[in-house]
Length: 243
Image (spheres, rainbow, N blue to C red):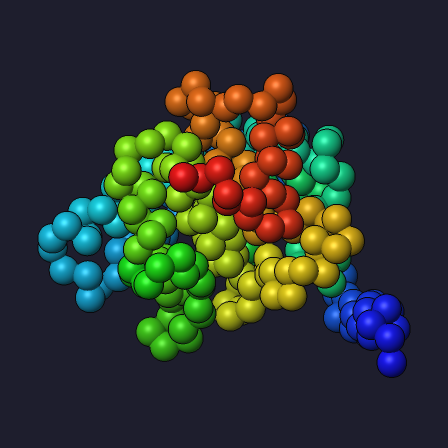
């Protein structure tokens, strides 16, 4: 069978799967304008990370990222990015929300979707993953040490990339409903969203955080904020320029 037929068959199967997996988005009301977060996301270093350089680096990285996420600029940028990107996809195959609704959920303004407790620990290389753990009841965010090195470098662009990574993983601490251990924002089979040019919530959130950080440090070089978000990736992380 020629290769094009394989590709066509794969796309047909993926499209069928997409239709089956689609779920209606939750009813989220967003204030106009969307306000900054009223409280910081409940993220701490992993309890097994005792005092020392690893913990100090994790604390600095967490604090800086949460400062960006909690800023008025981030709230305005995330809520407003839909004017350029259009609807934001909850998953590669799922429903969509407006950028204002995504911002309202991510920033804790919707009781059913407030971030659950999470713990950061260092992993290997470029790993970045969030795992729900019903017992003891928090999300374990494992960030590869190479991301930590980006933060420790002190380079503004490298640090902005580290902020992107952690803000993205924090999107996976937003539950579908209060008490649920399912993500509201998912990106499994991310390639489908990239193929269809869909703006995925988790990647868009990360890019908005990164570009907000660059703005705050006078380091954004793109002509517009949406251009910055597109450059760093709305459905995958285009990390080649991170250094």
